[in-house]
Amino acid sequence: MRLAKFILFALLTDRSFSLDVRTPVKQAPAGAVTLQNPYDSEDAAIRAGAKLFQRHCASCHGQDAAGQNHAPALASPEVRDAPPGALFWVLRNGSLRRGMPSFSHLPEQRRWQIVTYLKTL
Image (cartoon, rainbow, N blue to C red):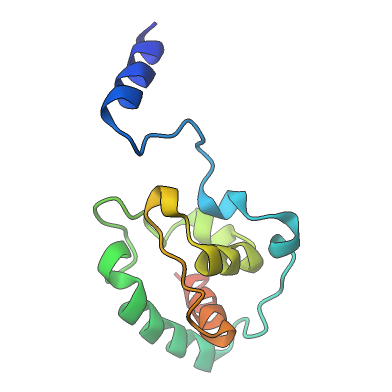
């Protein structure tokens, strides 16, 4: 009964509340999940990804990727263990429901560099 009251309260008071608890990474389609990172473990890609992260991601996810406000931590096992293609898919498509914008305006190489950096956190 307590859970039902919580869900009802959340639905009535928080328009962004969703019963779908899957994170954007887990929502990536199978075709995206199988994509391989062409820059995997390359030092230059890690450094470039770190700079891109600071420029495009740190304002929401924090300088240290520990998360802040409503943005989740990216320095986490979920991100570290996620398939690179799933992370790339999230960067390309975003998740408007969770407040994550699309970064499809960035060239593919840049998005892969961010993924390369995220996998080092």
